[in-house]
Length: 255
Length: 257
Image (cartoon, rainbow over all chains, first blue to last red):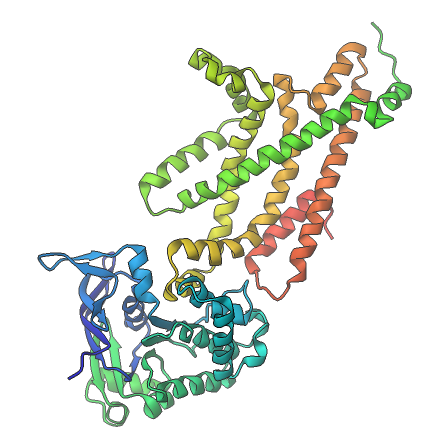
């Protein structure tokens, strides 16, 4: 079997006495779309943030494309945290979309999309602008290039955020509840963008409670509860005939 | 000597007009120069101090906390006397300290700047901490390094919060320069003293100084308004955290609208 794009092994995360991740194992193959669900506080967002080292981990290891994220292995097997420069380079290959969009408020839409290619990759501004324009067209916002984020609806802002992440040609896209902060009528446009991204072969890990999205494009659905993965299965089976009582209980609340 | 109870308008007017013959104009120019130099130095020192204050490293944070404790915990007047008089006594006044200990203007401006740096640190820190942590997350997730995150994303947005109260500090500084009269810097209050020490026309001499102070603060307030208007043009930028600062800046420096 091909080496998975994401390979997480025994990931533990503690905040002081509280253990939020209690040993997570997860493999995601190239082109696979994984949906993570679970009650709030189950650790799914924290796990997502560990995947690009926005959070440190206390135990275990995470590899993206065969490379450790955030750490390097010392002789003897212990892990040491990498310096900012190295972590930043790793992160530049992992796209992330946040619940609250987090667009840069002092930049126009197109500047938001150009920022990382220019600053991180050293791309010429003219080239970056052209590419950003193409990405904005892809998410249906070519006409908003020179607007400031505050002028956009939540759905439009989130689509810009997706374009901004894609501008770095990421190997993986992480979505942290991308539609939870949106008015109901704006959810569809963001999900449509995510669906077409999934169909284009992007490897995706999505923390979301959008069942329709999961059924339509996900290859696998995962239920997290209390810091562990309780069940993972193909969406048909996950939603159709869940095995674990906690999955049944969770689905009964959201379906 | 009997001081007659009337306003000596002839004296007042002869010193006020024409201004280019008045020692008060030279003093006012000196006040403006000291204000710009001391306050700008305070702002420039405030940035590294604010970053140090928000550092996670205790070894960086502790010296900054000590600095703030020291400079905010003692009166400015005491600090001015310390740099001009205290320092020379403490060190035996070696030659290399002459630029400070034998130059009241330098010692006084230094005292104002170092004191102001402590206050600017808190203003800048508040501005940096008002930035949504999500902005850090997004920038870091894109692969930006810590320095890029600060310079490209955080500081530009924090500046919109920092600038209004900073301008207020310029206005306050212009008035605090009057404290340098105690070490005989020829600023406005010292100039007034030079008059009333001779002719006992306290009210007239102090009024002359007041006229010039009002001119200076009015000038600075006008500049502040212009900058404020320029910020106001870009209303499409959401800055909820900025509102209270604006109010305070305008409330202190000019009439409320």
